[in-house]
Each structure stands twice: as structure tokens, then as C-alpha cells.
Length: 152
Ligand code: CTP
Ligand code: ZN
Image 1 (cartoon, rainbow, N blue to C red):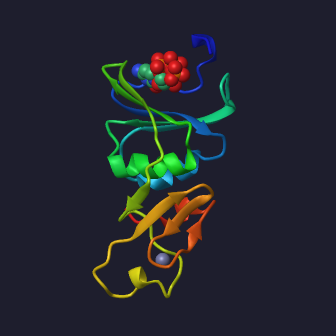
Image 2 (cartoon, rainbow, N blue to C red):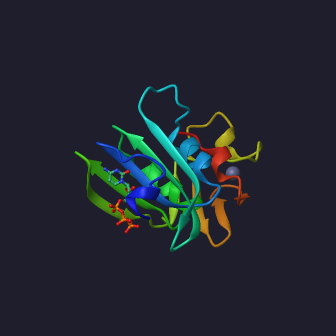
């Protein structure tokens, strides 16, 4: 895309989550726990033309970097995403997300009878499987609604 067509401004410092599957931008914000009340700059582009994906979403968060567990969960809803770290307007680091084998302590199990929902000191753990994530304790599978069960 030429400078002419740039939809959302470049940022000075922060993180650009690029090549997000079209329609997932708001779920990306949910995963990051961002609702705008935090005070840092957030720009969202939805259904932006992309050579690689056809249409993509893009999320730019100023003055904030992502934790590994946030990136792990992001990879589940945006497997093609690129995480760009920007400092002083330059991209200083670019990483593709990779799907982890499992995610611990970040998702809650939707099964009310799951041991992780009893008052026990047990951390949730989901294995990443082909069609979603599977609770290690009760085998409940989360598919499209992963973002609704983030617990961070
Ligand atoms: N970006 C930004 N602010 C900056 C620098 C870059 O918002 N100061 C954004 C760009 O708009 C782009 C992403 O960060 O969406 C990655 O930037 P860059 O690596 O320069 O773009 P590409 O080479 O097109 O990236 P890729 O090869 O990953 O598609
Ligand atoms: Zn469970």
C-alpha cells in the first residue's frame, strides 16, 4: 500500500499487530484487555486490503508491548499475525506468531463442573489442537469463542 493509501497513522513507539484475519481486530483488543479506558493510543484498521490475506485487520497500540502469554493467545485467533515492535517510528523487531502446544493460566474453562472452576488452587491449562483448544482437566473444546474466555 502506498503512503497515499495509508489508513491508520504510523506510530512513534509501541506494537503493531499486523496481518490479523479480517474480523478479529476487536477480539485482539479483548485478548489484550484493552477497552480504551487505559489512556494509551489505539488504532484499529478493519478489512484493509492485503496482498497476502485479501483483507486484513490491523491493531496499533502505542507505548505498550505484549507479554508472551498474550502473544500465545493471539496466535489462536490470528495465526498469520505479525507482531512489530516500533521504536522512534522504526520497526525494530518483527515476529510471526507461532501456535504454542498449550496455554496455561490464561483461558477459563466454560464447563462449570470443571475442577478449574471449583475453589481449588488449580491453574487452567488448554492443549492447542487442530480445531481449537482443549481443557486438560475436562476435555471441553473451545473453538471460535476463545476470546470470550480470556482470563488475564
Ligand atoms: N508501522 C506503524 N508505525 C511505524 C512503522 C510501521 O504503524 N512507525 C506499521 C506499518 O503500517 C505496517 C507494520 O507496522 O502495518 C509493519 O511495518 P513495515 O515492516 O514497515 O511494513 P511491511 O514491510 O509492509 O510489513 P510486512 O512485511 O510484515 O507486511
Ligand atoms: Zn475444563
